[in-house]
Amino acid sequence: MLRLPKIRLVSPRSLVAAARLLVEAGPEGAALAGGTDLVPKLKRRQLRPRTLVDLSRVEGFSGVERRGGRVVIGAGTPIEELLESPVLARLGALREAAACVATPQIRTSATVGGNLALDTRCSFYDQSGSWREAQGFCLKTDQEAPCRAAVGSERCFAVASGDLAPALIALGAQVRLVGPVGEREAALAEIYQDTGRRSLRLKPGELIAAVELDLDPRLSTYRKLRRRGSFDFAALGVAVSLQMKGGEVSACRIVLGALASSPIIADEAATIMTGGKPTLERVAEAARAAVRRARPVDNADFPAAYRRRMAGIFVARALRDLTGLRGKP
Image (cartoon, rainbow, N blue to C red; front, side):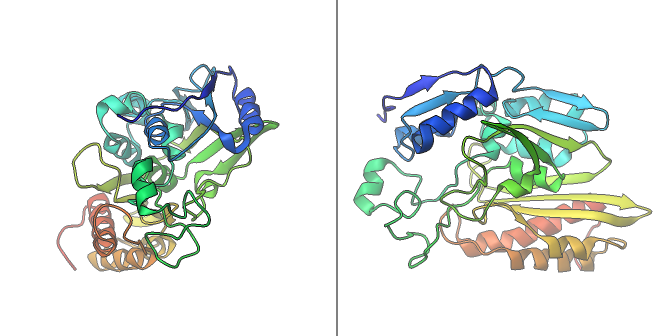
């Protein structure tokens, strides 16, 4: 049986206090929200913090609130609440992505912020400490070790497998970030960077406080590839959003997840769909453009070539479903 190590637990009442505690702890500190991903990693000794900053007592950290034509989602909101909130009924991609996260039991504890800040995954990294020691540690945990997934690489290719990030980026979400000396806002896409060792581009101690997005008449959907119909992390996630005007696509966003260390925004594919009437030929061309942006390695469930091929298939299916097109070009 894998057991938790001895850890100091502190429970501040505000995010600013939590951020200061994390700065004080430095690399030996970690934030604890739902803990559904963090706690197993502690047991496997993938992460070895000495201090956990518990966010469960932070006031105003959870809840879904409508503010005019926008919605604000607290980072501490349980993912299951996204499925129950009538405010989010029109945000198809977000609700579909939330429904794909783990199992109903886990979704009642797992939080929005935790899923957005999910540690990157790799088939060589997500093993017990004794297994990794026997096989030889990897670049994600030991800068002197080689990358086991891409031999000879000087960078870590662990993948960002969270479901909510691609969906929220496709919906144009912003995040409010709180640090030890104040707060700032940023586009959600801007807080990610394509490096598996540290995929979040945040300042020391900075925490995701809330997500904000428009409740516009945007069509959106999310597709997920995984071996089992529940529980499994994504081997591929595809989020697509469209705005239609006069029978033409006026705006489009296509985001690929679980193929790199950060969500991939397929700008070329989105541009192909924008500015005209949707056709099967344009859908096929957009799908091919999305595949060109995908360069996974063999460090997740399913071979990399299969995940890359399925990215194009999922993009095409999503676009056909949103536009009502049927058949093949």
